[in-house]
Image 1 (tube, helix red, strand yellow):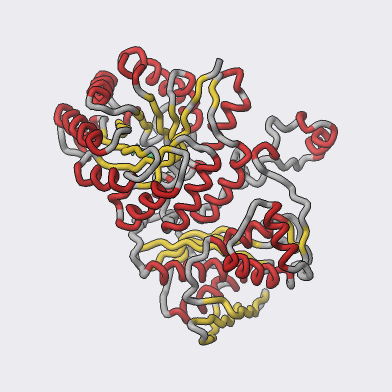
Image 2 (tube, protein in one colour):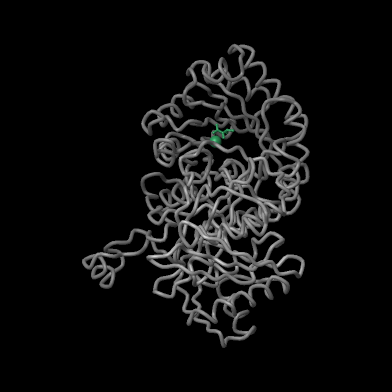
Length: 520
Ligand code: KIV
Ligand code: ZN
């Protein structure tokens, strides 16, 4: 006997709230299609009233992505609900997700109301939503810090008003597993109407307990968990989808709960989200980090060679992590490239294939062998590219231990070449300075990450940046066998996003401690 746990994926909503991770419509659709392949039960596609762009993207997901329920978030006000309901109207199975703060802190300090009027507001919002959409979820924002009796009242009242799904969030990541599990247990006992509803939880990771709290909630009767791929989300993030799924699968005998997740798609989904949202996955991240299945100590390697179960509790290949045997070289033609792309699951339309081919030849000219991971990096960067206002034509660097680094860059715009040079604190800084000079736009580097895509001295370097231009953060990604070129390509990619969006993205900039004083 096992219970089915519904996986509510909010990568495209809570995950997209990460500064600089904003997706355009095409990217959102691509991730949503992949989430459908992963077989999540619900995709929260966005917060449509937040911008016309997000409304369009949620609408496109609702129209085109088949299988999962498509949900849209709304505050408990008519205008938001109208927009959310309209955005998901054409989905096979639409859901409007309404939320309202329920803790005294939220009611008094944020909503400036009292408990009774907040309760009325929640009930009105749910009733109003039910007129527009059959399936309504209500979230008691800051539920874990809400007075228990009041939490029971608001849940009972919103179920009576028509909410089919009740979500209890640990909005600020304050709960402890035993306490949160107990809360869910007591809610089940005290609110019998919950037996007719789906009881959901939504945990944030401020104390690193989001997954533990979600699992404790499942043990105590939660039917749905809200989570994100790679655990991305507000502040320290949300509960990680892949960790929850693999806990339930690997320790089935402890929870007797299953999900419908197609675990073979986990790794591919993780990579796609990381690349399209430009959020690197930490190497030691459980399940999907690059070190999650690598064994470095001699004793461990010896054990693994004798029997993998000595040091592995999951099989990487079950998660879609394969060491493909593909090796391409500069002499491989289009047919070989197409074949290898097929083997790693890519079928590209002719225009993207041509771009990938050109980039592949460029890289293969400088790197002896191209492995599957290199190819994935090249494809995913080309696929996610915005229209290139400026294209990298040439980059030359002079640098040494006893000289000021100088970069000389040629960019192409509308068929015309623009060349300039600049110095910098380091060679990467010099290259960034030239890009700023040529484009005439100055940016502030807020985040920079560089990693090798494969092992070996000739590994492809992959750079991710976040650049603040004006009041907006733009992210960029680039790869090359030359790490300075990879960094410059990433910087240019961020600038091309700026040009493509005309600076309209309205991402709030916090005074982030990651602010990077460039000495690269
Ligand atoms: O963290 C939270 O409380 C939320 C709600 C909108 C569900 O994201
Ligand atoms: Zn949240």
